[in-house]
Amino acid sequence: MSDHTPPREADNGHAADDAYRLIRDQILSGQRSAGAWLREGELAESIGVSRTPVREALRRLTAEGLVRHERNRGVQVQAWSIHDLDEIFSLRAVLEPWGCRLAATTGTIDVDALDALAHRMDEVAPDGRPTDVDELTELNNRFHRMILEASDNSRLAGVVSSVIQMPLVWRTFSRYSPDALRRSLVHHHELVAALAAPDPDWAESVMRSHVRAAWHSIRLRDGGDRASGPDLPDQVSATTGQPPL
Amino acid sequence: MSDHTPPREADNGHAADDAYRLIRDQILSGQRSAGAWLREGELAESIGVSRTPVREALRRLTAEGLVRHERNRGVQVQAWSIHDLDEIFSLRAVLEPWGCRLAATTGTIDVDALDALAHRMDEVAPDGRPTDVDELTELNNRFHRMILEASDNSRLAGVVSSVIQMPLVWRTFSRYSPDALRRSLVHHHELVAALAAPDPDWAESVMRSHVRAAWHSIRLRDGGDRASGPDLPDQVSATTGQPPL
DNA sequence: CGTAGAGAGATTGCATACAACCTGCCGTGT
DNA sequence: ACACGGCAGGTTGTATGCAATCTCTCTACG
Image (cartoon, rainbow over all chains, first blue to last red; front, side, top):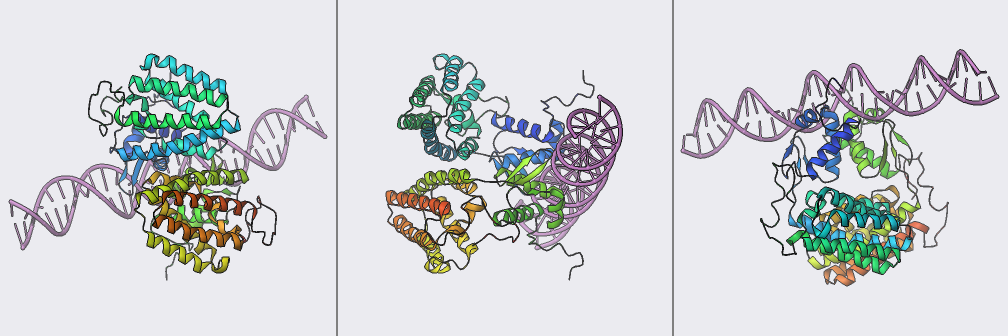
């Protein structure tokens, strides 16, 4: 149909936004591995825009901590260590339970919608074995976001989502054992119950368990399932473009 | 000496950084009042650089929440309400005590340096009446930052400092009564003692008191001192360029 | 043989020109 | 009198050119 065929890639209509989304997705999905340099020129050409919107996208990603910017040298994908993981989850273990308590207190949450999300996650991961990790990740993020947005503290939601923007955390379920994943889904249903009650103490407590369980699952594959590969710093394979499931 | 006289304003050597600092200071000091539009062209001319670094500075400020960006319309200084204040302080009331506990646990804090800061604040504000609010603000920020940086969780420090970037919060002491300010300074000394002990429970508890006391001080001038002016949404006078002390 | 230095290539930082878009005003038609 | 449409001014979004900086390599000298 079109004659000038923009170098493929989803075109939303605004160059800077497109660049931001595309680069961000490439980082979160592991196509750009930690430490890799992001050249403005290369990105601009591959996206089909000039360097200006690319620079803007890279600044946003810098502010979000996904990439690291060195003056006159460029930006590279932020590398993370197990210490980063501990920082992130210890923060979540404080903020999410508190937000969950607030959500139960205000009582403004749409329990039915939350319950629907929990059930859809059951369907996507029958018996703890996900059929579509991306879908599951998306549903999980929406579940947690919905709770935090009901806390009536927009900064809390913003802070948490800014902190979990990291490939390993983002794709949490890649590292779950079936047992751990089943437990995670059960937690979700219990959270729905606690918020429906509503019982702030209960809700806070379940969320704390939920986050700390996730922490352990992602750290050391607690399920004892097939323990392949080395433990952590191996991240994703940079060639295939998709992280190992 | 120079013939082309850069329109004054501190020149650090890098246009984008200079623009960022200058605009940010103008917002935090109240020279740019809430809701005012920040025109790229005007800013570029006043700073003495082109629009490009100004745009970069504005994006950083957008990411930090100090300004609000509307596509094809520009950026305006973020307006805040008492609800924002509550969001910020309820978040601080969770995060800072926790960070203080962590700092006491790791025991990596430089207690002497912290004590020195507390004493310098006493000197700048004898008898609860500050002689230099800017100096006092700077010392206070360094005091709190030093504790959070000793928590061994860099994201925690980053999150807190990103959240307190707001004119009213930044210049907290402008709204303190002498009684409240004295109490705040006493808290600082007690924090030093708790961290020197070190007693995590004590440290956490004092910090919680400290933040919640600040919350009330800034909300309603709890000291009962000369209760002039309306209560909150009056922010700063946009004409004088300096907020009321 | 190793090291310091110069130079070329590549990349980012900044400035400027142009295009797209929004807003407010004015004129016209109903 | 009121509503619609278009035109003009101003502002942001994007592209492009040039300057500044960094890195890597090759060479010359100790």
